[in-house]
Picture: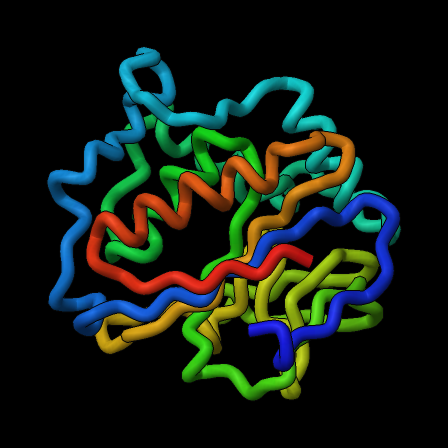
Length: 214
């Protein structure tokens, strides 16, 4: 992974990058039986090695504020959206890659981007966006990215801690994913522990995972 990535200097970013290769297309795989029900976040039944907290949520927001972005309202971190969706029973299964990502993000409190690298154009970089935007869903809605820390490929921004780009999202035919854990140095050890659990879950589903620690 390392030879395809550059990371812009940032005082707070403590990202982890995972490349995952699945034995079959995601449309032929299932996350059933992996014991990832969102309800575990609320009832404490899970054995998740990482936990979200008010401290985690504030630290993530501070990370995103560094470039001038305002992570509030509809632009709040994706990990906060997951908490609300799970509480309302609206966190439905999508595919194995996204379901595992959502479970890890929900419990850790760290936003995680997941893209299909076969739909992107290397090289990749992590940097703060300037006057840029992209479509983030099938209906064509756009998010303005000014000041937001993003994942870029050669075509432009394609992921961040709020909403990932529609052009590189996973589908039933996806066989590989690239994940960015948007961790912060204000939470020592949290990114590393989150990445380790994320990797363990993916490997338990039969995937091969490469982890880069910047």
